[in-house]
Length: 564
Image (cartoon, rainbow, N blue to C red; front, side, top):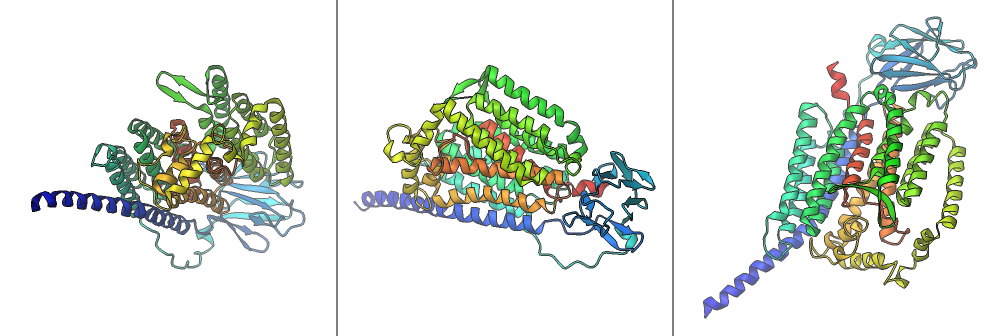
C-alpha cells in the first residue's frame, strides 16, 4: 500500500522538478542574453581605434605638425576638413590624401589653384612618399612618418575588453538552455530537437578558431551577437519543424561562408571598386531573371524555384546595392555626383515594384537615403528623394488599389479579426499571453497561424520565450545600427563608414518593418526579421550585410597589416 502510494508521488515530484527547471531556464535565457549583449557592446566600444596619427604633414613655413588619422583625409580651408589649412588661397575642399594597399596618394578636388607634388601638378591620383612636398595655394606640406617627428605622447591605460572566447561561451550556454527546453517540449525527454543547436555550436567554434587562430583577428563580438540571434531563431524553428530547422542551419552556414568571403573582398578597396560595375550589372540581371521566371507567392513575384530550392534574388541584391552605392569612393570628395547611383537605385526599386515586393522596396529606399546623404552631405538631395518617393507612393496607390487594402486594415485589425487582420490580432493576443518569460518552446498557439515562422516570428518569440527575450533581440539589432554609426566618424575610410551605416540602417529598418507590422504599429509588409525568421535567402543576406560592419572595424585587418 505504501509502495503504491509512493510511486505516483515520486512521478509527480519528478514532473514538478522538470517544470520548475524549465521555468528557471525560461527566466535565465533572457537574463543571460542581456549579459552577452551588454558585454559584446562594451567590448566593441573598448576596441575602437585610438586617435593615433598614421602619418603627419609638416608645414614647411611654420613647421606645424598636422596629424593624418584616416585612410581618406580631406585637406582644405573648411573647418569640416580632416586637415585644416589656414590659407585663404586654398580652396575650402582642396585635396584628399588617400591610403591604399599600394601606398599613399593625393587627389585634387577641383580646386582653383590646383595641387602639386614636388612641383608637378596632380591630375587624377598621384602617388606620394614620405619626404614628398604637397603644395596647395601658398601652403607647402611635407609628408612624414610619425616616428620621424618624435614619439607620440604616452597614452592612458585602457580597460581590458571581455575575452572573445568567454563571450562565445556565454552564447553557447544560452543556446544549451534553449536546447534543454526543446528536449522536454513534448512532455518527455527527446534528444533529437537538440541536434540543430549542437550543430550550430560546432559552426560557431569553427568560425571562432578560423578567425582568431588562423587569421589572427582580435575581435569576435559581431559574430557572437549574430550567433546569439541565430540560436534563438533556430530554437524557435526547431520547436515548429525540425526539418525547417536543418534548412535554417544550412542557410546560416552559407551565410557564414559569404560573410568570410566579403570580409576578404572588402579588405582591398581598389579591388572592390574595380568590380563595382560587374556587381551592379549582375544585380540587375538577377532582377530581370526574377521578373521572367519567378512564381507568385502571397501576391509577390519574388521567388525563383529550381527543384527543391527556392531563392529570393532581391535579398542578394541588397548586398550589391550597398557595395555599388559606396564603391564610388574616388569621387566622394571630388564630384559629389549621385547620378549613376540614382539610376541604379531607380532600376532596382522599379523591378521591386513590378514584383509587388513593396516591403523590400522600402528597405532599399532607406539604404538609398543613407548612402545619398553620407556621400553628398546634402539635405536638399535627401529631401528631393523623399518628395519623389511620396509621389511614387501616391501613384502606386492609384494604379494598384489593392495595396491600399493593407492601409484600410491598419490600426483597425480588431474590426477584421476574421479576414485581413487575422494575423495581427493573433500576434497581439498571444504576445500578451506569453508574459515576460513565455509559455515554453513548442507550447505556443501562434505557431499554427500562417507565416508564423517568418513574418510573425516576433510574436512567436514573445509567446513561447517571453516578451523580455524578444525585446532583447530587437535591441541587439538596433544597437548594431548605432554601433555602425559610431564607427562612421572613426573609420579608416569613408568607404567603410558609408557601407557600415547603410548596412546597419537597412537591417534596423527591416527589423522595424517586421516588428511594427506584426504588432499593427505599421501595415504588415511581409519582410523577415533579420537572423531570426525562417528563410534561407534572408539569412545569407543578413550575414552579408554584417560583413560591412565587420570591415568598418579598424581591428579587422590589423593582423594583415602587422604581417607586412
